[in-house]
Length: 128
Image 1 (cartoon, helix red, strand yellow):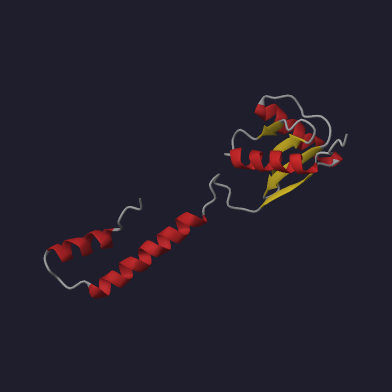
Image 2 (image 1 turned 90 degrees about the vertical axis):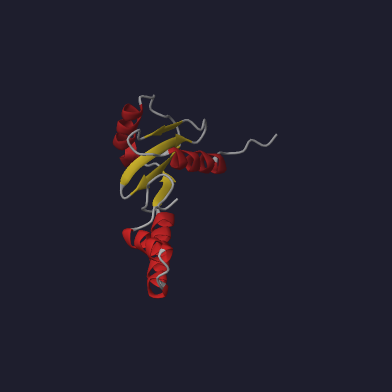
């Protein structure tokens, strides 16, 4: 729930005493709507910049190694897909296994889920 602003609190007090609050009601309504819009614009993971999902290239090897070291996991092998935001690598997923390493200092559970989904989409299908 959004907490009331000081003006909203005063409007409630004025109403309790029977004062006319019409001019303030519009101001309060606009303030509540503005706060709701700001709140809705924030991404669930706290990442409010565009996220790019792309295949890894050779020049990404150092950044992927750093990411694996931060995550405490083994370096993924094979074909990888990456997620980056604002030029910063957030996660990497092995296409064949779906194994993911992610930056533990960024809330990236949603990004890791997107990467696993993308890895599944580009994984070669074996037709029998």
